[in-house]
Amino acid sequence: MSVEIAINVSPQETRVAVLYNKVVTELYVDRAKKKDFVGDVYKGKVVKVLPGMQAAFLDIGLERAAFIHVSDLSVGTEPGDILVESDDEEKGPDFPRPRRQNILPIEQLLEEGQELMVQISKGPIMTKGPRVTSYCSLPGRFLVLMPNVDHVGISRRIAKDEERARLKEIMKRIREPGYGYIVRTVSEGVSEEDLRSDVEFLTALWQDILKKQDQYPAPAMLHTDLSLTLRVVRDLFTKKVDRLIIDSKEECDAVRDFVKRYLPEQTSRIYHYDKEEGLFDHLGVEMEISRALSRKVWLKSGGHIVIDHTEAMTVVDVNTGRYVGKRDQEETILKNNLEAAREIAYQIKLRGIGGIIIIDFIDMERERNRDKVYRALVDAMAKDKARTRISRITDLGLIEISRERVREDILRTLSDLCADCDGRGYTKSATTVVYDIFRDIRRIERNPGQQKVILGANPIIVDMLRDTEHEGLEQLERERRHQIVVQGDPLLHLEQYDIVVMEGARGA
Image (cartoon, rainbow, N blue to C red):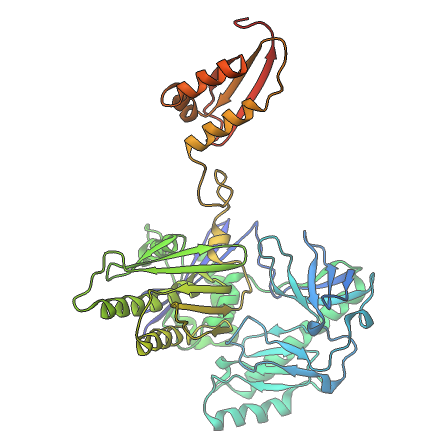
């Protein structure tokens, strides 16, 4: 299987695509005006403690206050109180998740005005501020340093027992006392010298953060993570990657310098793309980005899936579309659902969809067919790096997925709510708007003196008032004894209109 990483760099944004066998499987976007805050360390000040939610809000200097739950607090813990959820830094977000085992009420741990060092674990999403933790984690090339956790773990993706034992023995010798470490997957086969270099670098970085904590008043940023390009190189550019392509000469040189420090033998796999055709056009990534923004995604068989986003969840509907099959109906539905399951898993990972996801498969009568579709979805999601839970398929053909959400998904990153429909996905029909206008005119308070009503509306509405709805307009004039003057304004949206009442004699 060929693996490629393509990086498109412009002054405004950086885009990264990971391709397996020429198929885009992961997509990352970082814009200069919309920074990705995950991993940044801040000195914050508690502005509100919420005992009912066992949480607090902190001012860390960003537009919206940060949220912290009591389980993310290292304040008042003892060595036995701390548990590392996962040793595998590649299964889940960018940072391991230490958690308290013995939880005291948050009101006994924090008070308003208290200063606290925290790290952003989830960036701002829609109207929500960032989520933070006081268990800071600093990722290096081979290790992840966890200063608040006295624990050494080895990535589960290092399968060989001899190698795990070797790395564990090395870490016992070189670790800083009292500090915790996760040995990353890329450490398989590396020397003690490389691991020691990472320990020294991460320790120095943490000491620098502690110095800044003493120097700066809250709120203040103490540490920011690497740029998207260098994060991708650090976390994804392993020996399994055949080539890394960058279309910026300056960024390519920076990546080469970065890689020479850690894995100089992989420098030869870094390529600068300098052709006239855009890199993402050349690799077909632009087409996949367009698909990732589409509501409807067609399947090869002729069926399709429809992906709708709501405030609380994402809903995926499966349809046979043009697919009619060759045998009986149940067999046709099964094949369509199986293909849809694989495509849905692909779209979830590509789009970065998180939270609750409900999939409405086409109803199947046979239990074994429902089980086949469930297994196909589980298998397709198996390599997903985000923490995911998948429920069994119900009698109604529904599957619920709970997927960890760390960042905004691609749709929300690359698009805004529609200015015309305000995110509803539809607008009122012209007929509905005309009848709304009639009702609003009838609400005008009667006046003994005759009045003139001036109506400004979208030209589509004006045409309807003068054509198919002219009788209703004339009846309204007779009923209300108003002269109604209709004026078209192309600057008004279909649903917008202005009604102005003028005193005076008819025809004045």
